[in-house]
Length: 311
Length: 261
Image 1 (cartoon, each protein chain N blue to C red):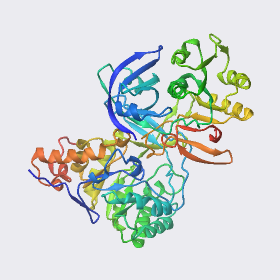
Image 2: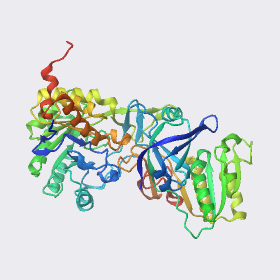
Image 3: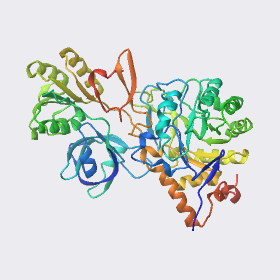
């Protein structure tokens, strides 16, 4: 049977719901030669800031059980290099590009949103208000509902592009942040960014990462991410992009059934450069096998089925 | 040009108690590989341990399509890898990174290796010897055993050895051995690989001797292709450096530009 994987997110029509998770595939071009991004619904590129950033001292990555802990610290060449040098190269890929931005201040988010407004090759903005590895900005904006709302409001006022807020799980109740971002006008929500974690080097008797703490990603965080999507789906009427440890189409389906209209594949690329494209192909297979005509039928379907247990 | 391929295990044998030699049939990788480059190796099939392991290329046989890796079994990833048997497939990305580039005017090249640093230098020694360069190998290890991981004697190169415990060759650091021999042997270029402490000491000696060269660095790595920017090192001058990615800007860097912690 012919099936449809197309989804509508924040005014964007995507041919399938699979994206890359920001920060895991750079600007996409690092993976040229291994992957054809045009098989995906969208390419979410690495977070840029107003000024270039050097990032954190190494080591920046540690392996953890079924996951990794990273503390890159938003190393990036700055928004001007993105616009001038990188976008002209990568916008030749036949895939919508979503730019991720982070500021030290609310005003900087506004300036970044304004700078990228109308820039050819950008389909939407993702607000990174959830990076756990920088001293200023980042997660600070994602943990306080009023700050999250202010960043979203300022971004919306300064761009005509769809605005997606990426939320952190490092909060007491992610629904309060989601509600604040929705009320401020966010067009969609991405959940989740990494969980704050730490590894100690027992031989050296000191923290392993140069930044001391880092962000946990990979399959280890998947249940936390699925839970976040489940909760926010019930609380907020916005399209959700689910991510956290997706390695296969089956993993992606958990998110979709929990309420995600799109999904992002991140850390899996380190293991398998073809991971996102394989997830997209696997979703089509699942629809065909199950005789489901349209993937949108599955979005949030687990809520309608109810849970087996009681609590 | 690099590839994501399944290489078939042709030979997988212990070299020492904790080292293994892994020979993979991967003709496109063998064809493209240059000394100093590495393969990003998927050690198991499950999500734990998750990440690939960067292993330097020890040797290639282009006519037979073979790539040899030499690695030490250290943690969970390499322990899993050590269990792979002949006939099995091992998924690798490679060849990756910028390898050794010995400028053509240098005719007498010193290769200085400490411990597992001998692994990538073997491939380089062979490649240099084939094109008629004079190769002076300085191989160091903790013990005589450790020197046996790479048999430089099969190549037309001059080999000097040093061991920390004095069980073979010069008793002490390979850097001291190199520095003492350099004034007589007059190498005009140095290519080195080994632990950071050794490379740092070597950089000091090279500066005294006004010798240029390249070092192969290691860092904890994520993607291996330059996207995640996790495997950074400091390149430049002590007062003005930038982070560079070991996986794509290296792993081999100009010796004089490595800024040590």
